[in-house]
Image (cartoon, rainbow, N blue to C red; front, side, top):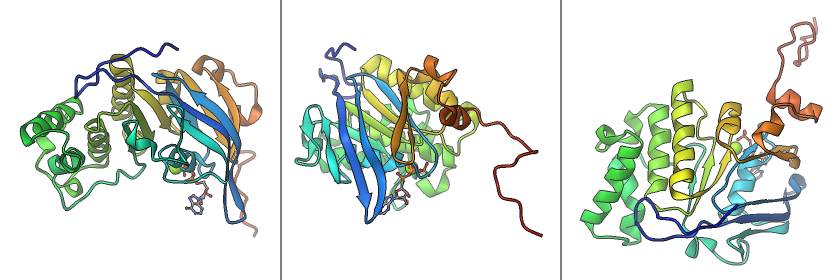
Length: 267
Ligand SMILES: Nc1ncnc2c1ncn2[C@@H]1O[C@H](COP(=O)(O)OP(=O)(O)OP(=O)(O)O)[C@@H](O)[C@H]1O
Ligand SMILES: [Mg+2]
C-alpha cells in the first residue's frame, strides 16, 4: 500500500502515515503465556482489524504497540522504531481509544478533550478550542461539551473517547472494542467514522473488535487471535468462507439446542 504524505485533520500539516511491524511477539504473565510467537505487519494507511474470543490476548497486543506492555520475546516496531527500547510516542503521534473509555468524570467533556493539547502546549487556548470543537462536531457531540462524562450514555462516552483521541492528531489510531455496547446504528456510525479517517487523512488504524460487521465492512485485512496465536490473516472477502473450522465457528456460530456448548447441570 502506498505511503503518501497526507494532511492531518487538525493541524493541517503534512504527516506521513506510519507502519507497524509485530515480529515473533510472545508475552507471559507469570507462567501464563498470553501471546505466542505472533508476527504480522500493518501497512501505512491501512485499517487492520484484530478479532478473537474474549481472553485471547487482543488488548495485551494493543498495549505492546503503545509501549504499555513489554514483550517477553520478540519485538514491536512502530515506524521502524522498537517500542520496547524507546518511547515511540515521542516520534509518532498515536492515540489509543481504551476499551472502557478512560474518561475523567471530574472534567467536562470539553476539558477531557483539551487536556492533552493543553499539557503539550500544542496551541494557544483559541487554537485548542478550534481543535476540540472540530472533534466534537465530527462525532456529533457539540451539545455535550459542558457535560460530565458520567451524565452520558455508553455510546456517547465511546464517541467522546474517540473525539479525545482525534485531538491528539494521530498518525496511528488504535481502538479497543469501539462498538461494544452500542446499538447497531451507532456501531455502523462509528465504523463509518473510522473508515472516513483512514480514507480522508490516511491514518494508520488498528481496531480490536468482536464486531463482524465492522471487520467485514471496513477492514483492509483481518487477523484472528485464538489462545494467543494468530490463526488467520486475510482480507474480509477471504473471511466470508473461512477454511479453518475454528474461525468459521467463531465468526458464524450456530445456535444448536440439540448439542449445547454449555455443560448441562447434573441432576
Ligand atoms: N496485567 C496482566 N497481568 C496478568 N494477566 C493479564 C494482564 N493483562 C491481561 N492478562 C491476561 O491475559 C489474557 C488476555 O487478556 P486480554 O485483555 O488481552 O484479552 P482480550 O482478548 O482483550 O479479551 P476481551 O475480548 O474480553 O477484551 C487474559 O487471560 C488476562 O487475564
Ligand atoms: Mg480486550
